[in-house]
Length: 266
Ligand code: PGA
Image 1 (cartoon, rainbow, N blue to C red):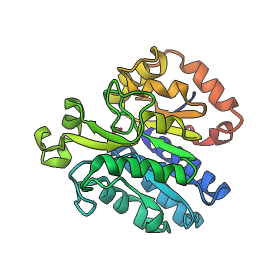
Image 2: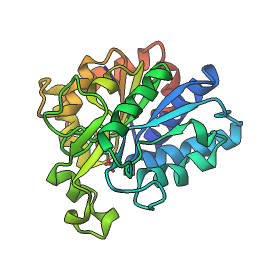
Image 3: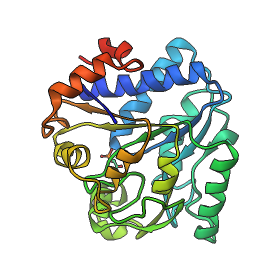
Image 4: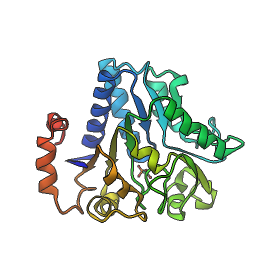
């Protein structure tokens, strides 16, 4: 696990975007695992700005999103497909045929989950997986006690998640779908590289628990300690609960791949 502490959310967004853009330049047919949520909005904005300024070519990139609400159709503005299309897909030269988000309106959600997992496998697995982290430690919609071996499936949402996402459903947690399709923890762990972005003081507790606490099924994100190449980008506020910050700063600056981004840390 590599931990990079940067000064502000804007620094975190620019660094994440830089890492993605550089990977796409190096690997034009990259399989990019996409995340949604408030944190990622700024990451996509930074990535689109970079892609426009530098003519980053996404024409051969394949994308797979982490999750979608069951019962919410692609053209519903509350869907993650809509979020992705508005914030990223339509703003760069991605081929819509290469952009995959689980279909929340599929008549058989379990079959949709299995088909989505098969599509990821057919693409050769995810090369670079973007991740946010929920206040309860979920990655994707893998709520507490999701098996670390789980695959794409239907997952009931935790009450806390439905509260967190209620603003997108008129402010009423009961209006948030009770289940979602999510990539599994096992699927995420098989990505070649994972990049988790956490910003803001409200993420300080869960980040400290995840990074410096024990690996436990109760906090799904702790599974990332089992990932062979996971980087966490945290702004100062999200990193405020961490004990080993001097160590993280020293190792990030000296890291063979991340160290060259040191000018973007603050
Ligand atoms: P957030 O969501 O970026 O809106 O905090 C992250 C998540 O729940 O995965």
